[in-house]
Length: 108
Image (tube, rainbow, N blue to C red; front, side, top):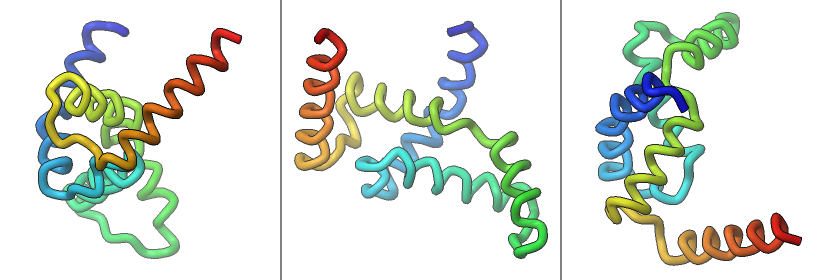
């Protein structure tokens, strides 16, 4: 990853922390976290969603907001390295099982 990409991750870290802190359900779902961040960016774009312009607005929003992969990486670092805003026990156990299954699959 290029150094500029790390700068992007550092830039969105406070936003990810804010969402993880304020909306506990985002700790269990990258998709929900991503959607809440997109919602904030959409508000700041000064646009309102109507059916005719929705796809154009969505395209603009996806280009303007941080991408889902970056948000997921930052969330993972906050939860795994900083040990804050961790997922529920059920989700944590599910992720550990999935990681174990993936590791087993990758080495078979």
